[in-house]
Length: 272
Figure 1 (cartoon, rainbow, N blue to C red):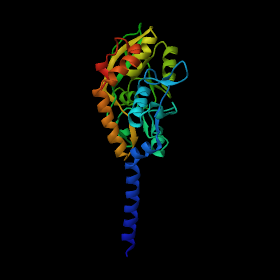
Figure 2 (cartoon, helix red, strand yellow; figure 1 turned 120 degrees about the vertical axis):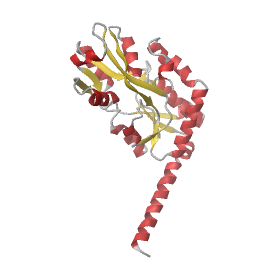
Figure 3 (spheres, rainbow, N blue to C red; figure 1 turned 120 degrees about the horizontal axis):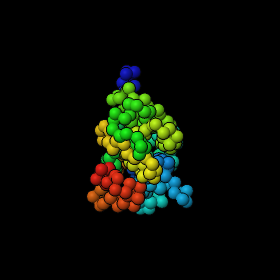
Figure 4 (cartoon, one colour; figure 1 turned 30 degrees about the vertical axis):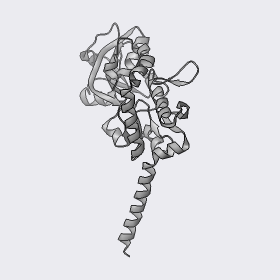
């Protein structure tokens, strides 16, 4: 028997084991009776700590609903707060690839680069880049040429400005809270980030306004699973379709997002 043939058999066996392991993800969760979901807890109204210190928000309600529909009880969701540092960078995928979590629902933008690392389910939200400035500041894209723009490091807004407006001064920070702290401190600056975050913060800070409602293309936020976890991905896509049909997203918008957005950001602008 040739060495080439033996090597081929070994590769085929390894591939089969890996495929079976990945395709068995859904059954494994059912047997464990627990689903580990990576989330964030510092970007309201999508995710935050409430007055009791519990993780709450639109994404958290979705995570618990998934656990309830899959395992019969929302308490079966083991919510693991991911580090806030660089939640948009490659490090966010490590818990999936290591098996620490079964899926991530953590304001993940479905970009081409991200799709090379993980498998995305159907989206639960549509977002765009918005720009926040003070009420006294001019609005429109031209105003950004004369003032610094604060952005979250490794976010889609950083890529957008780098590719479309390299002449605009951009200041990047590690976390969203740091971005808003910098915006408050610098009276000449603007902030550019996802509208789902920008509109909520603006309404809680009345001295600020939305200077540019939409900048660039629309993006999708979606749950992510490990590459190759086909059974879990298939179930998740069906679940999101059912939740959309049954009105879950609208109900959760009214309970979790409407108090933050008011009439500024309507459900038809962000819901799938």
